[in-house]
Length: 267
Image (cartoon, rainbow, N blue to C red; front, side):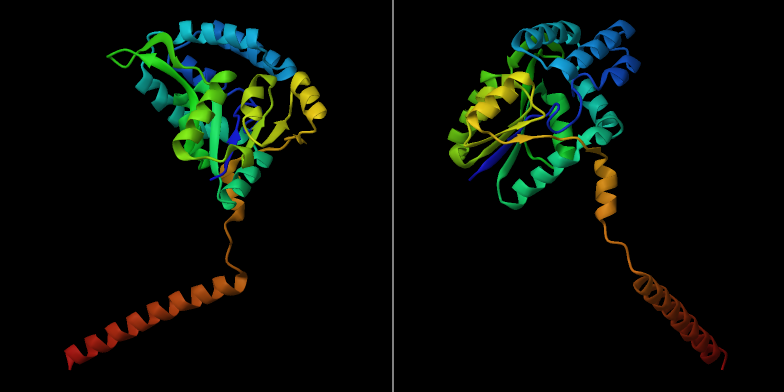
């Protein structure tokens, strides 16, 4: 069995999945306006220059401290309730097409992200991707975040999780594919036979050019709902007219039958 592993942020979606939910978290009282401003700044930096290991470590520590005491169930519910509004418009069409190609080819498709599984799992379900490797936070007996991590899906953590999945299910990694935008995902890309750099940061682009890896540019965010709606075949005018005539014929037949029945009863 072959597989295709997709990073999430700036590979499948155009923005940071962890930061895009700032507004609903603010409305629910989980974060303050100051957190939103800092999050917007962090997102801008991430978009312009990427995220190296030091930036990711600082972001991770800040998020752990921020989310300490949050209710895991409440976070999951909030993500699911706002997912369509926030994520649907920023999904790369090129990523959707690649996911579909791999699915048709019979490969197992994974989303592999350093974002929390409470965010990644609902998003993967929305995209129709059944397999997820994501960061897992520790929770206490009351279902509240402790401010610690059970598993961090980042850098070597992604590679270790992929290798463990391959050992467990028999994935053929030399014949598998991986897609990412960041040099921090180099371990994941190196774990498969067909690595691809997508919207790569400066460091990853240099490595991809040196190793002659394919470099893909995703530039077209689309709405998944609209894309699906556009692909649903609409009836032709002839078919619509035929359907209308059929309905009218059924109504007329039912009326005639009823009228005859009433006449017989009167006789």
